[in-house]
Length: 102
Image 1 (tube, helix red, strand yellow):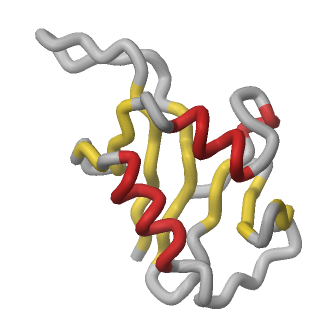
Image 2 (cartoon, one colour; image 1 turned 180 degrees about the vertical axis):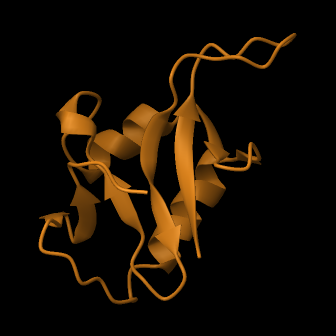
């Protein structure tokens, strides 16, 4: 079981609609947290990703708000797990994918 995390921009306070969510990554039980590179459109490494997400609204796939601090705590806590994927790009010791994943 896993949980996806997104940056939500321009969310309407009345209807809840927003711009297309930007996928940050996925947390899966027993696996390393895998970050989404998003074609390097917003950031190209971990430091830039951390800076870019500082003032963003982060939600999980269930619509729950996740603070910047809690999001990065989750990412860091899952760095000692396993990751078996030929498509992984290692940047600063963290796993990123630059393709679609669920």
